[in-house]
Length: 457
Image (tube, rainbow, N blue to C red; front, side, top):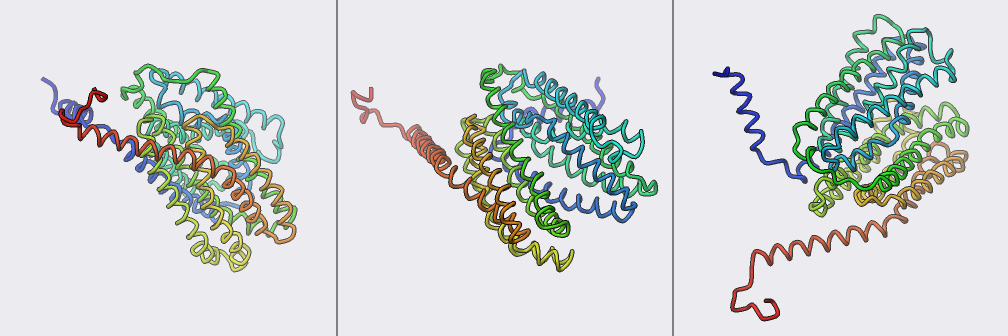
């Protein structure tokens, strides 16, 4: 006779198995809301982390730790090879190949991250970045952890549980804040890096374990794969990586333009102000992943999913734009009057161009679902050029606000290029919805036999 605990566990497992699966629309809404809330919480806790580090550690040690962490994040991002976008789109249809694909993908990213970190140590400014041999020894491991940490965000979206990424990121933000306070007595940069890296490693292990359990328990990962050909996968990978690489150029180059054209003090105003703008940017882009995953997993429900996605992302962008225009400027005033004076024009411009990003985000989501990314790559290339050239031209004459005008020009150009194809796609989806409603109505109201003609027969 089994124990009561074992019997209860079996009953709970049976109950979960008998429960109907969560609807695609509800799952999309749940994942999107979780990611939005987590981005707000992690942003606040991130500022608190660096504020605590600045108060508890010597300034030079904070500077060293910041350099180590920022370079590690950069290397981890480059090492991801846009595999996260591949997992978002194709894990829902990978069937029994999902597990092996994840193992190969994560192993490739970890290997590249390790090699990149060693390359930076050998070829980079080692004496500037590292104070001792212990920092050099742990740095490659730190980069690998951050690469896997970042890759998990999009991977769990592909598994239909983007809310796991939200929980992981909130846990990491809170845990590293507590850790940096606990380790403050050491006063070393290594303690700041360890508080970031050890907590990230713990989160990575937990999520990897959960991913393995989901792969083994979900019936769809025992089905026959419905993946496209290797050639089509290669084209998708190249396009996706191109979009990611191009999108990373402007955020790296623009601060350098501000420093050289306007000055270091202006760059401080820009960095603080832009951290608010970029948080909303990230929030809008995060919502694309859950939509792509749900639409790939449930192609028969793409009409309702697209409607829900467009409605949600539009509300987020518009409300966010309102916050940039009316809430963010007073918030800058708490930091300093000069920050509010210099940053407010940029915030007002962002309140206009951030809602415009909805057009590009919705197009990007549908383009990933339909695997037609060529126009998205071309548009991203043009937008990157406009942002960099516009920042060079405008910042020299009007200061930090020039970056805002450059982004406004880029987002306007993107909207003009993509609006037509996007409207065409949405109209097709609308017509499909009407057709499906007509079929459903007809099936519910069949003709009486005396109304059936010879033609119908």
